[in-house]
Picture: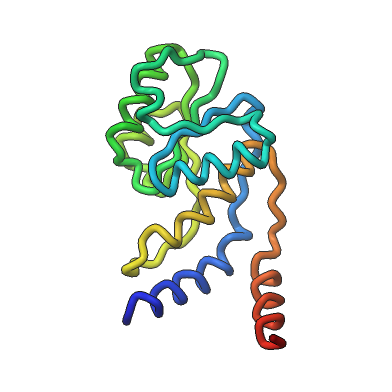
Length: 167
């Protein structure tokens, strides 16, 4: 299977699973922390909450004074990013509440955080590992920030395919 075929397979599988992700709002005072794609997930949430939630790279927070009246949400598909783990430990020492948003409930990050949120998306092991988790993390993070996410992903996808056929 080539890369494009694996992305298509992963995407089609994801469409049927996204509507199953269900998380309650945690707070209005969230700080999302992530690297790479996970940082972009946090930026999406920051933008859609009109900057009520904030997003930082772990390197932005490593030597910062952390607030104990905010909840730090560490977004990481694997839960193994050392800089996230360091900042999570720093947040706990500062008396902050911490949440790991990860697919890996057995990761070091998940073990040290106060709470674990798993997107619960069945992931395929394809050559495109980041693609399957990105949208699932966006959905999970939007939900914990209180942004309602419609569950009709498969209907949207099929409508888009029909539009594409018409052009």
